[in-house]
Length: 279
Image 1 (cartoon, rainbow, N blue to C red):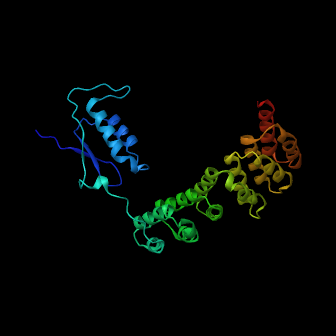
Image 2: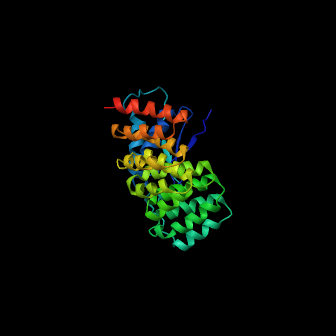
Image 3: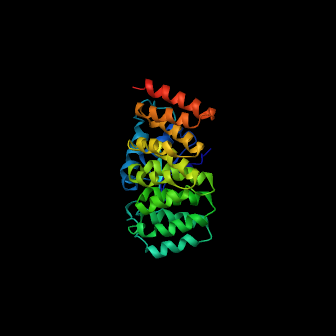
């Protein structure tokens, strides 16, 4: 009885790797590792290596199993493997796709903008698109593009997202700012003096996630005078993550400033104890 081959997506060029029913999980993992879509230029070499491995079954920790059929590749066109990348479309043409009715088209446009040579000029339009976008995977694509670009304008857009009502978008933007790190730190520091206490809390949390050494002093300075107990509590938690023993006097002073708040007193005691014994 003839066995139908199973197809698994191989790359963005519509190539497929085919085998029989006993195509194992480890084979799939090796295939995806050596043909990572993030490195399409190495496709031919990687696929050749994979096929050689499949035929000889020579990789660490893997034994040849009886009856294992060799794998083979199917390509739509014999010349496709040698095809050049598609030329870059004009930015205005790509931007027009941001208004498409199909969310898949919008997501593709966002990804294309992120790789475009004039991507930085499109950041204001990405910001507008993000504010009106309702489909989660398109929102994710826009935020990912902004994080990848990491220009001052892109950082400003991400900081603006911290005031959105959508908690997922706020958290994703905060994690993106943490990933950008030092280039975003001065703009995140400015949040510590924002009128909205929620933004000050977001600033404390994001700075702690960056683990940017000067952030310790910025947070200490903020908790010395911030009137909101919730913001100060966020500062205590941030110092628990990145603080040093130099923060202990200011933490003790904070507890004295809110003598009737049991949580602040408890949290300060715990954090000071940890900082005193930290190496």
